[in-house]
Amino acid sequence: MSLRALFMVVRPVLTISTTLTEERSSFFAFLSNKEALVEENLSLRRQATDLTLVRAENQRLRTKLASLEGRTLPQKSVLVSVLAAPPRSVYDTLLIDVSNVPNVHQGMLVLSLDEAALGTIAEVLGSTAKVLLFSSSGVQTAGSLSASTTSVDLVGRGGGTFRSALPSHIHIRPGEHITSANFGGRIVALVDAVTVDSTQLSQTIEARIPVSLTTLTTVILIDVPTVRP
Image (cartoon, rainbow, N blue to C red; front, side):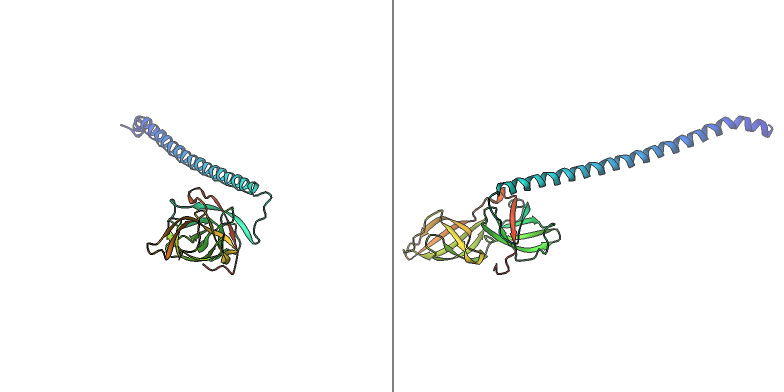
């Protein structure tokens, strides 16, 4: 068989092979483009989700600010979002967003929107900060009864609760505020229960923080250099 005859025989095969190669290349190029489009679409969706979250957070803070109309926030203070609170965080700690807080540092005081003293910043972690609540186990806070100004040394027990002991002759009623001069006379705890010792010489005070941690979404961060943890 001559070369020309052989070429005529294999030419259709070569043509089919070339066509298949081109189609395969086109197919893989199509898949590559499709994957790129899918990734771009996912990226746009993530950006849209982030934007939605930012807008929602902005609206929530606007609502909070509106609820504060007619009130003056403390000097050197800023509203910040609570990213995690018990039970989503370790008990008696908060995780707050400080990405927009200049010069944030350890020891800054954290207040509720009603300006009750909750705790202080224990650690700054980049754009977030960990808040140690005064109710944390073993934390001692000097306070006083709002009705009589009697000194009360609160000891954190964890779970948002405190305990203290006083002589039995001091009158204390459940619901009474316990304030602290260390934090500008702000409320630190509410008396929950009072139990008189069997000897009738002393009484035990059970107290709790004045807010619900599970619904805490926004707090006030204030720089008070004189605050003692």
